[in-house]
Every structure is written in C-alpha cells, then in structure tokens.
Length: 413
Image 1 (spheres, rainbow, N blue to C red):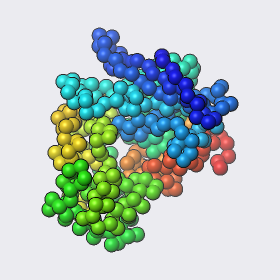
Image 2 (cartoon, rainbow, N blue to C red; image 1 turned 90 degrees about the horizontal axis):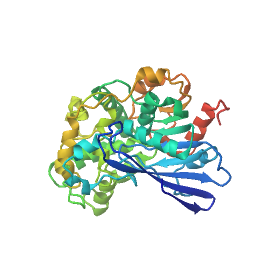
Image 3 (cartoon, rainbow, N blue to C red; image 1 turned 180 degrees about the vertical axis):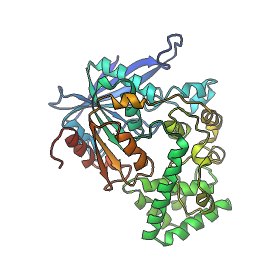
Image 4 (tube, rainbow, N blue to C red; image 1 turned 135 degrees about the vertical axis):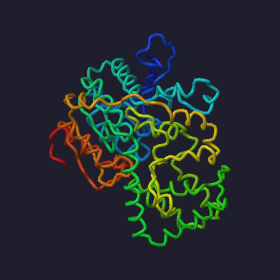
C-alpha cells in the first residue's frame, strides 16, 4: 500500500492508497478501485488508537486535515485521544472518484450499485487490517452513521467505540415512511422560520412566481423551477443555515448577487453528482426507491410553494438543471434498482456496541422518531438527545468532545 507522509506544523499526515475489489465477495469479478485515506497524528500521539471518520452524503469526500480555522472543528477534540483516519468513501475524493467522464461507461449504473454503505464497510475493514489495527473506533456523521450501522451488522468485533452524529437511520423501514416524516419536519421548520421573519413568506412566494414564469435564470444557464426554489429549505437543517437563507431573501431576486447566491445555496449540483444520484438509496434498506420523496409529497406541499423542502430530490431536476442532465438515465435506472438489505437488526442488537450518539430533536433529515427506535437496539450506546444543534451539529467543536466523555463514562463538560 503506497504511503506518503507530510508534515503540517504539529500534525503528521500519512496518505494511504489501497487497491480493493469493486465488487466484494465475487472472485469472478476482476474490477478494482483505489481507496484513499489520510491518517492524521498530532505530535506525541503516535501510539493513540485509531478513529475513522465516515463522512455524510452519500457522495462526499472526507475533509482534509488542516489547522483551524480551515480544519473541521471536531478534529482537535478527536486528535486529543486518537489518530484520525479520514477515509474518502469509494467514488469520492481520491478513492476512484465518479464524475462526468464516467458517463461514457456502459456499465455505469451497475457500477454505482457497488458504492453503498456495505461496500464502504468492506473497504474500511481492508484499510484497518493494512494499518495493523486490531480494532478502531468510528465517527459517523449522517450517512456516515448509516454506514456505521452497516458496520455493526457485519463486523462489530472490529469496532472499539462508535460515535453517531445525526446518523441513526431507520432500520428495516421503507423509504416512503422516512420521507413522509421528513416532510412533517420541514413543515414545522418552514413555519418556525416564517414566524421569525413573516415577510419572507411573501419573498419566497414572489421568487416562486418568478420561477414559474421562467424568469429566474442562474449563471450556469439553469432556468429555475419552483421545486428548486423550495429546496432552499435544506438550509434550515444546519445550525446557521437560516442566516444564509435570510441573507438571500433580503436580496432583489432580479440582481446578479441574488442569482449567484441562489446557485451557491442549491443542495444538489455538479460538484458531487453522486449526492443526487445515490441519495434515496441511502434509505433503501431492502427496497427500490422509485422517487420516494416525490411520491409521498403531501398535498399541502404540492399546493403551497412557501412550504420549503429539505433533501427531497425531484425527477424534474434531471431535465431542468443543466449540470444534472447528463446523469438522467443512470439516476432513473438506479431509482428502479431493488437494493438488498443493508442492516441486520438482530446483529446490531447483539453487537455489544459501545459509544455515544448525538440525536437532534429538530433534525429535518434524519427524524428523531426513527433515530430513537434504532438507538434502542444499542443499549451500550449512550444517546445525547438535544435541541442545541441541528443536523450539522458536529461542525460545532463541542459535540464530539461531549460524545467521547459520555462513551468513556466521564463527567460531561
């Protein structure tokens, strides 16, 4: 496994590249991909245990190791007690990234079915063994928490402690049930925002009317649809996203500044196409998704453009968003794919998992109700149920430190 080392002040960063099968468990399939991980060690911490970070998404790479303020805010807390493994999940970052060049592949849709959480677990296990770690701990943010549940379903003995931040997914639940509940969460979040800023309901309505008339065109050529306007609601899923939404709605929608800021605020774009292409599959624990969020949209959302949406993907964006148009056929194909089971509830129950989980009361992406059901499968994982943060709480420097204290039975700071 090629390894290169670089120094960044008091940090040592070892870059590892490992070649693994595209399809784990099928010796007849000779296709391979590369997996990249950066192992970050603070001076004096060379013998600390490993903590692997599993990023949110799907389709996003791991953050890079820098010093504050460019570093992820949780990294300092992690490095006090661990060497941190920043794994680029397959298809992202430097792990054989999937991009527009891959659209020429005839087998692209089939290849993408092998980028799920279960395959990421197999990659992580191969990396753990290469690093010579008998066990390690996992920090799973959002989709990374989903992946951690898959890890507990198959390889729990490899995990010393598990930390979840907004990542306790529903187990064995149809995605329709999950998305139906996330609409309820977004209805509540929308109304709460308008109670604080009543004039912005009319602002959203005016922007939606402009979009309906074809009058909102972004710098990249996208003629914005009403559903894209409503997707601004995803900003309400983070601690400070409401500030970005407020700033946008205070602008003149016909100005250059508005159009550029609107484009930057969109949740799905060309930078990481896998985020849209694979998004609903992250909730597909043994089901085909068939545009679940679109199918279960409540009537009041269909009728009222001021009810904002979150991570709810829409089929029409494959036609209206220029950067996503090339991904139309593969995305439609994957929506019909019958995904195998991802989690084993019985295995999770007997996994003996120890750790802690941040469960956000107001999470609009990973609903509290299903998170609590999943938490009950892991009595050794202490839940921290809080309304102090939204789904992005890990970006606050205190969340991981609190979870580590909870998991180790120390007095919470």
